[in-house]
View 1 (cartoon, rainbow, N blue to C red):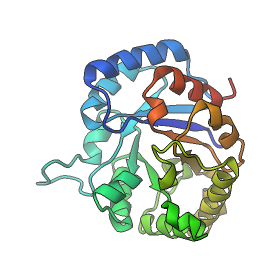
View 2: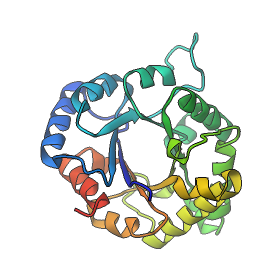
View 3: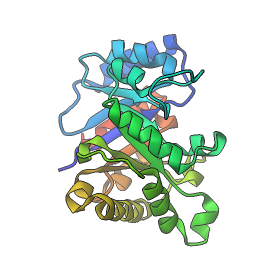
Length: 254
């Protein structure tokens, strides 16, 4: 049985003072985190020490939105996975479409980042997804599967709990458009099939596959209904306490 995961990607939002208020309000509103699901917050790098402080003992995990492909060294502006892990973080996003698009990160680089995350003891949340023109050509599944396998080159998690895949159709991120529950389930099934080919059936059955892309409380329950969708990587809706509490509760059927 895979534990549902709801991960909030704050992107480049919130000052430390704003984040502190959010953490306090969120934990008060959410109450005890049930064991049937996992919740994680992924703020920008300056907020990670604050997340460690405010979330300590709450049952809510936290992580980074990116890590370097290098472990240590003279790489100005980079942040090592080991630095993130030393704060007590559990997760690190790698390969988000915004990194792939705006910073021209290719799948080979994403694979290196995933390896560094694993070496540091972090769980990579590896993002894949297609542009609208790819979907309109009917090539979404082969595109995403190839992107996934290329991003996993040389990546050996060993345990399926050490890897999370997030399917985020690029055309749905921040646009208000959402893949249908059927689209999300078909792609999640294709991802799981590719993981079975890469790592074996048992591994693929244990890996959590998330959906991301304009998730809201109004559509999340239907997306979660698919047997291969195990939660969500949430963008804008994670910035507001009420909506993220609602999404977290939906993940455990509260």
